[in-house]
Length: 365
Ligand SMILES: Nc1ncnc2c1ncn2[C@@H]1O[C@H](COP(=O)(O)OP(=O)(O)O)[C@@H](O)[C@H]1O
Ligand SMILES: [Mg+2]
Image (cartoon, rainbow, N blue to C red):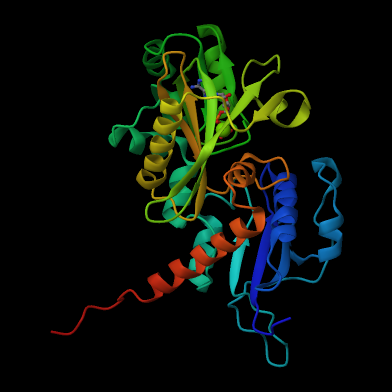
């Protein structure tokens, strides 16, 4: 094989609730990597935050079951741009493909680390990642751009402790039921459907166990429709997928997502009218731009019985498992996983070059 293949570090695991899902995503990115162009280096982050080199054959052999994967012991891995000590051969990375979902992976923290280290990486930058992870900031920006979102109230811990009555009064305007959720989380962790005022305080307290800020949202009645977006000028938007919830929780809860095998079905393509598809795609593309996203994203919408779309959220490092919506929607659109992964890496390199060429000092004169 060519000697000048680019070294791609797939970084996965991490200290979030989506640790195992991240390992499954990494396995599929590895399996899809075009070996004629790229050489993989596998960096697993264990639950304690240690970076450990992982074995390729072992990761490839790992099954699709999140209960049967783990970060294995291995030699310590360092960030690519850290100079090796004298006499120690450097195993640098040319580019990082993070398949880290949630906190410290998808929220801009890892992206910032890689920016400081000067290493190109796949996906949204610091700003887009941080915006996409914070449902309060995300929804304020969408609202500001005139894009439809469910009505919501932001609850900060300090205000909630000092004046719970004002929070109750603000929430009362939303009607019932409402959804409570941490501003920064994912995987439906900390999300509850609240039917009556008496359940509100415990539900907010529950959400505040995961973050200092929670959201209370008016419940939307509608189908959950998702689109995959791939960066470009303009960004490309896939066909639609749908989450059909069958779990007794009545929404796409943590149980419905991960614990109950029959909790939800992913339907792709989703059955939509041609005009619904076109409107959904246009909205998904706008969301990607308004939220300063780069590289890729999955945009999740609600479609009401009146045919109206509302934006639920953006996921800047969507799941890449064998059954995940993001790669599935692209496969349906004729973009096979290998091409998708190559395009994402090419986008990362192109952004890095573009940004490296920016002036950092005022021009003389
Ligand atoms: N305002 C809402 N109206 C109706 N359902 C909601 C609302 N907010 C959340 N849900 C349900 O809860 C699930 C998880 O909420 P979401 O905001 O997407 O959080 P996460 O980032 O954890 O996926 C959604 O997929 C949906 O089923
Ligand atoms: Mg969601």
